[in-house]
Every structure is written in C-alpha cells, then in structure tokens.
Length: 333
Image (cartoon, rainbow, N blue to C red; front, side):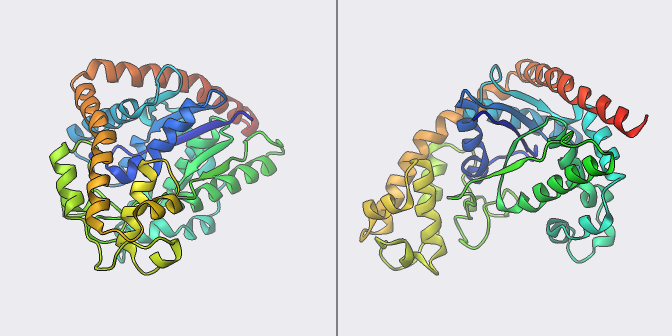
C-alpha cells in the first residue's frame, strides 16, 4: 500500500549518529520504496523558537539539506525544501491555532522540559510550535509520519486537531488523520559517555557523539573511549538490563549493520568490549565517512543546494497552497 510521508528535521547544524540512525537512515529507506511519496522538510521556522545566529542558520539549513542528499535521499524522487519558503505553513498554523484549545497545549510535556523552571521567559513560539508541526503535516494530506518517542505526543495532537477541524466545519475527512511510523528498534541512540542520556549536539563533550562530519580517526577514537562496563558481553538480551552503555553500543552496531540485536549478541556474546569496539569503529567508518565526504563536498556548492531547496519549495507550495485555499473556503474567508 502506498504511503504519503511527511517528516521534518530542524537545521541545528552538526547532525550526528543519533540523527542518522534515529531518523535519516529511515528516511532513505522510505525514499527508496517506489510506492511511497515522500516530503522531507528542513523546519527552519521551528528552529527560531530559540535565538539563532543569522549566518549560522543559513549554513545549517544548507547543511541539513546536504545531509539528506549525502545520506541517500534522491531530490528527484522526494521533495526536499525548507519550511520558511512555503508561506502556507505559517498561515495554516494560525488558522489551526484559532481552533486548538489551550488545554491540549498545556499537556505537551516537551514544552515543560524545554522551557525548564522559568517557563514565563520561554517564547510563545516554543509553546505553540506543536500547532505549526500539525500544519506542516496536514497541509500535505500525509498518511504517515516517522516519529521518535519524543514527538509521538505531538503527532497525537496533530490527529486531534485534524479531527476537531473536520467536525467544527462539518467537512468529514478534509484534513487527513495521519498514522505514526515509529521505529521499534534503536530509535533512541544514547551518549557514548552516558547510556542514560540521549546523544545530543548540546552535550559539552564532543566525545559523547559521532558527528556525521567526523573523520575516520575521530570515529575510531570516540568509539575506543566510549563508556562500557567491566562485565563481558552477554549472549541474551535480558542480560543487558541495567547495562545502558553496553546496550547502546550493541544497539548502534545492530542498527548500522541492519541486523537484530539478538544476532549481534550471538556474534559478540562472551567476548570483550574491545572486540565489539574494533568492529563497530570499522563499520561506522565505512558507512559514515562516505556521507561525511559528500556533505563536505555539497556544502561547498551553495548554488546547487539552494536550487534543490527552491525547486522543492515550488513543488511543496503547489500542494500546500492549494490546501490553504480550500481551508479558507471552508472557514469563510
């Protein structure tokens, strides 16, 4: 069955192994399925919920697009664009904001986590950005949205908003209610220094993550220094309980090798972590270095990247703009 897929990545710069294994690798697989119609958005409007440096934001937008292409997403098959170039996203977000109850937003746990203790100083944009995310998805009649566990609640909100709009304006099935595509295995890649923390570019230690632009020497060094424990590698998954660093490295190896955790445990069970680390560094280098080299090459070709994003925005505008006009007609503008 064909799927219409929408997903977005924030242009934060310095994308890492967690972004690749948790999202982009899955995007490539979806892109390669001939039955799927895929739209991949660089969500730069979402990025400005926190203060951005003007020049760095421009660079990050291009770098994110370059990462999509370098990882294997074909811009001739899938639409790649940046959100701010398609005005329908912001316009749709306003219309949907006007019929979304405050109570629904108050339940969003990510705002509480990101705003921290002093939420009075957080931007209104950070508070309402789940509605912009709903607009992103609903304008394209997406049937499926790849999401991690941290975005699952926002997709549920998107589904609620779609159903409320359809009911409020008596337009059954006008806004399509999307289904989540949740990766069951290895969707959360953890820090190489702390198996209880998600791999993140905001971690002050560069040794905590594998950046997609790292050199082979950097990858080998980071895997070599990755935290483990003193016990040998088990041969059963249940014996990984309370061993987060071991589970993380084995999960990374399984994901990058496209095999089950059970198969990885049979391969390394009883061995020392040095054996796993040597193999992991080798396979990561073989997968990441070609992506890294291509990202660096593409970043130097700004005209090419800008053309890909502009062409993608024109295609996206044709779809989203039509939906906006239909929404206006339904609302009464």
